[in-house]
Image 1 (cartoon, rainbow, N blue to C red):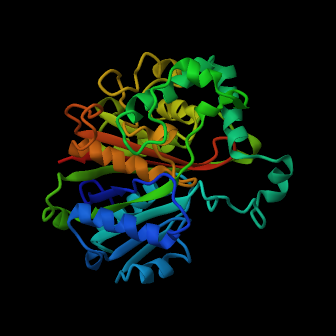
Image 2: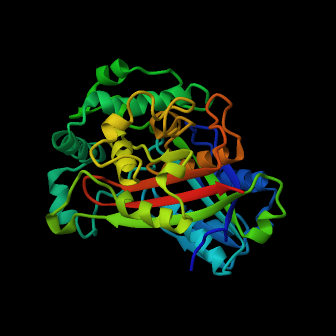
Length: 384
């Protein structure tokens, strides 16, 4: 069964706050984001018959369904870190194509700055006794991937820095972005070294916040006033330690991408805009290679010369500033990738970064760690 043309993005909402006080609960933040996305679509909570969430749902799906006063006939809770929300958009499209629901609500709410994004360090998890004695943390696991990519392909810190620089060129036009200063290569390289070879500026921002997406059936989409954004291809894949034979130079996108492109019937050359998960600069470089925008090992060269900057480069990316400069709620920034891709297809991005004639866009999420295991999900969308 294909989802091509069988589901549409009906509504989107990104919470404007990047730092929230203790006067709002996680459940209330979910409700605010959900309300915003439904209003964007021209729908209400009464229209929702499917609810989808990840690891940030307080009390689980049943508690949130009760809190939002929903009457649903389909539920899905999938947690793959930052890629969760792209998995959930794909699952919502599949559920709609199968006739299980017609209005699917997906919401995110997390407090990275407040500290609730800190997770259990692994008690009861299968790999815990083998890995945690060595003290792995997120940044050093990504640093290992960056170091290996540099060793194997000659990638440089100056090349990695271009990812942050490009994101900052876009973030300057986003009034909600955490970093609105246009950065230079020197700014990135002169920032403190966090885990060699990654500097502080090679890392994403950490924020509170959230967002929501509403996925609808074609019948519902025809009734809505917003420009129609159709899902035409989805792909999912995980990548793990492979019995100790792990290759740190590629991501799960090497499999999820081709699956999505095949279903959509398009190629990387057809993509006018790409939302690429940008937890770290190396994440973007490897993902661009794995999705087929350039050859393996040439990602460092590809991101240079403004190739990621809207209006200048070959592949405009993360025109909201991305996780690098705009927003990364908790440990799960994937929903923002879908939201900005939809804005681009609707022609609703800031005029300074809006891609001309943007009719096909890609959103990709990476959740977990490039250094150990992660889930990758790729969505391809088309303006109808």
